[in-house]
Length: 426
Ligand code: AMP
Image (cartoon, rainbow, N blue to C red; front, side, top):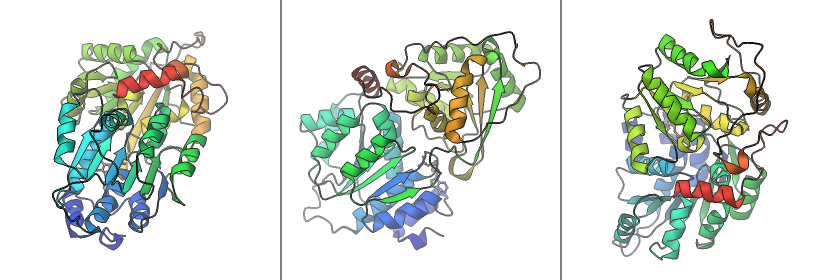
């Protein structure tokens, strides 16, 4: 299967070639022909599968095929892409620019936490493609600084994440102002009942596409658990980084405070590191990510929220310094490595307190993760499990949920969780 046989025209094939892609990934091979037939799709695809190009390429192709509007100068918003986070919005818009390099369309990105005026100016100048987070987009809708009455395509990227962050009502409000005649594409790493409901409400006879089996962790990720005492996790992490000569490591902690502390400690161990989380300014987050990508920083310590949607090519190592209490976050975390066919390694440092989380994760991914007992770091069997301090990071999600495989629906849309998460994304 080649990109040429998928029905994409020369300007897109040229951009694909410039990116150095030889052949479409499975999600691209499946989604591109269906989207070109103007059918809705409901796609189960994790980040790292090439899903962004999977919807961006056919969307650009269809835009290009559509007859140019009579008034060529008036750019109408034809495509709306909603994403859960600023980072993902920026990355998706960057992809739109890259793949659309040889086409005349304009795009812009809209998210909160930055001044609204430059966004208004960009919208006024005219764009065909808008990539947005739901909260700030609603601000533009209510201020009438955006006109969505000509939208032909709606793409919901990482829809499960948006629901997870309490955006369901915002999404519904946005969809309410869109034309009913449109093509809708929904991408989600996991299927929950809420996702099903959303798709039944807003998609029309969608084609179902699934590239990785439901809720299974990516095949190209080598996973391992290192049992270790809580007090010795930092020491073990430094040991593994130095021993393996790891150069680009994304480390997950459960709390912002934990991320800051760990990053400081790694620096003391002479391992360059930066923490990113919701309390950092957008500029600080962007800079940290750029430095990490450029290889100036060896370790990026992140909370789940901050790390969402981070796109780093071939990220070789992901470390769960602490296991997530919501099992599906594990799947998302390790989805940051082993991207688009490259093998990655995801290791979890697990202390006795986290055994229940580990059991739930293994139930969800339907396999046991191999354990490695690192020499010199065997846990002290006399240490008993203690309740985990969640650091008040995620109000409604603080309790471990025993035995339910980490069902992600519990209390998710409570107001407190919604507001705190939304303020982070705005
Ligand atoms: P995504 O799942 O959209 O976040 O994409 C993951 C990564 O795969 C991105 O860094 C893309 O640049 C890369 N990628 C997308 N499509 C291809 C392809 N056909 N061949 C190789 N790499 C790709």
